[in-house]
Structure formats: structure tokens, C-alpha cells
Image (cartoon, rainbow, N blue to C red; front, side, top):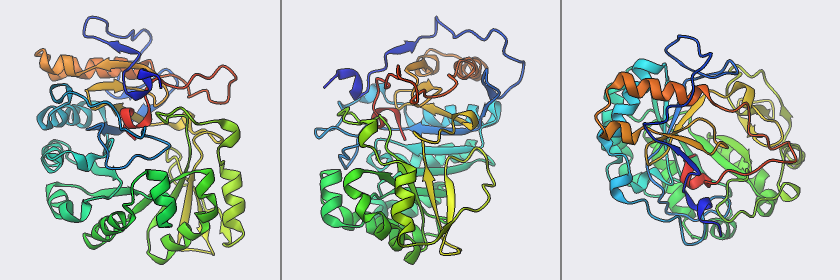
Amino acid sequence: MPALALGIPSIRRDPAQMPSVTGRPEVPGLVDRFGRTARDLRVSITEKCSLRCTYCMPEQGLPAIARENLLTATEIARLVGIAVRDLGVRDIRFTGGEPLMRADLAEIIRRSAAVAAGASISMTTNGIGLDHRIHDLVDAGLTRINISLDTVDRDHFARLTRRDRLPAVFAGIEAAKAAGLTPLKINAVLMRDTLGGAADLLEWAVVNSVRLRFIEQMPLDADEAWARDRMVDAAELLGVLGARFSLTQPHREDPSAPAEEWLVDGGPATVGIIASVTRSFCAACDRTRLTAEGTVRSCLFGDDETDLRALLRGGADDYTIADWWRAAMWGKQAGHGMERADFVRPARSMGAIGG
């Protein structure tokens, strides 16, 4: 297995090599050359995870990031503050790996919420252990949550994640509902061996009043087993779900939202599909990403990264860091290019980039 797939960036710009900003307009936001503005920040805080999902992690997990190379809670909050105050970011989402693997998660959220006035603070998690920590996280400022769940069949779950932890995920979901984190969204990655249970998962979601979103599998698995001719696409899924449910597509209110949504049996329940591969939404992408080591990644599928951690620890002021961030996003690529014959998958896997 290539070492790069486990989390080593292929290009890491250091503070002596600021990306070119030729032609960039004098505006404070995170604009790029294709007219997009990033307002959604994804912050990976760890490479560790309590599961080993086949579409993400290798069986042995990702190589550990040395503790001194991870951003601290204080550093994360400082970058969140710059993003919201100086760069126009309105949504903050903490990811991993699995963010619950950070013992200081509540501190990260608390410090970030304190400097992100007006922005939402959310998290994507597998839910394992959430029932023990949910109240601290909500008290710290967590406002929304997405929980990953690909199947409600315990045997399928164990095979897919390489861990028999489905009851723990259900406990986390119930805890989030009890804490009032609504709407509660469930993310499910489309896999060939769980497609037969997709309708069961949707039925469970409707009964439990959660919002289910299926995601096409992307070439971001550390094992590099993804193949276009074996993936389940949105059209195939709709055929499977349509055999049990009546699906009608409502109006999409937010054009930058990745999910296309369908009313289930006339509503009010909905099901979403994020067709990242076959129905690309790159033209409306509004995301910017920070890796757990403190690099800006302008595109999920772009291997260039700009090192903000070195600036933070080198004494740079907020103004300078904001300029570097703007420069990184100005160079964002037009799209992932998966439709092209010469597409090259990124060096980092999803677990190393952050969801």
C-alpha cells in the first residue's frame, strides 16, 4: 500500500512560498478564479478513528500523527476566529478521523464557539461514545451533528467497519436526539454489499425522524480498492429505493448544498443523495478545509496544501495568516476531474484529509 495514501501530502507549501494571487480581486472573502466563495470550513482534528470502514481506513488504521504536529485547541480556535472574522466563513464543522477521539474536543468547541459569533458549530462523527459526552459538547457550543451510519444490519455493519459496534452508534444517535440536536442527519456511503439494505436504512430513518443522506463512494479509500465500474451510483440507488417508496424531488433551496433531496411517500420525510462522482457539484463548492496538521486544502481532490501551522508557530499575525489562506483558495482547481480518463486520485485518503 502506498505510504502517500496514508496521509502524507505530496505538496506542502511553507511560509517562504506563498501561492500566486495574480488577478485576485481585493475582497476579504475566500474567492477563487472560478467565481466561487468558500464559506464552509471543515476542520479535521485527528487521524484516529474507532472504526475501520473499508471505504476510508486501512485495517491497521492510519499512521499516527505525532502529537506535536497536531493543532492544539488554542491554535484551532485562532484559525476559526480568523476564518469567521476576516474571511467570511459562516459554517464550522469538525471532522476526523473521528473527532470524539480527541479528549479535548469540548475545549476545541468551546474556544471556537467563543470566537465564531454568528457561525454554526457542527461535527461529523460515527457516534461511538457520543452518549457519554453529548452534554459537554452541547454546553461547549455544538449546534448541529451528522452521524455516519451505512447499514442497520449488525452483520453488515461489522464487516464494513471491521468492528461490531452498531449498538454503540445507535446509543449515540439517541443521545443526540435527546439533546435536541436537530435536524439530525445520517450519512451513509453507498457500497455494493450494503445496497440491498438501503431501503431498510431509509425505513429506519423515517421511523426515527432523522434525515438520511446517501453519499456516492469516492476514490478516497486508503486501500485504493475503489473502481468506477464497481461503485453504486445515484441512479442505481434511486431504482432500489423507488421499489419500496414513492420518491418525488422537491425544490433545492440552497444551490451550494451537495445533497439532492427527494420527498419520501409525499413527505414530510426526505432522503438526500450526494452524487459526488456522477453528478458533480464542484461548480457550486463553497468549502475550505484544514487538515489536522494545520494545512489548508482548497479541494478534497487537490494535493496542494498550504502550511498555516508554521505561520501560527512562527509568530505571524492574523492579517498575514488570512492573506495566506486567501492565496491558497485563489488557486483552487475547477473540479475533481473524475469524469476524465487521466484522473489521478489524491495522495491522501479521506481519513487523513478530514470528511
